[in-house]
Image (cartoon, rainbow, N blue to C red; front, side):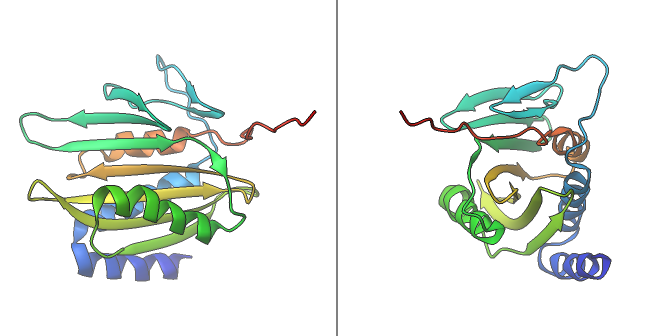
Length: 193
């Protein structure tokens, strides 16, 4: 895995620079630590469906149709970060297909990114696996990065997206991803009568 990671980092660095390399390192750290619910003094664990997490401290929270988002904007510097957690869905049974569908519907449709510059798979526990994809995009004539994380256990999947123009929010992103608790995650079962 380290050889794959090193090769990925070199490719990523060549294409969009150090920013992409740092984002990939953050997300690999998050995925490796996923499933261990962090306990932070004074911070309340929240739930979105059956997913438990610690929200980023002073970020603005808003809920839309099928997602929960947290946004932070530094008005002085123009730096921003946004984390979007999507509702759980039934998995196709294939992590690659789940990621491909999410990339098309969540990323390409909304952000029109340039070419996918990094793609990593990882297994972080006996049940859940993840695919992480990174791509640059331009918004209001400013370079940005979009990262998609698709998690699946073969029956269910969840996805979240990170958008940013800076690495200033690395700690908040890492804390959020590390706090996700998926161990008791399940979709509602339909009961036929």
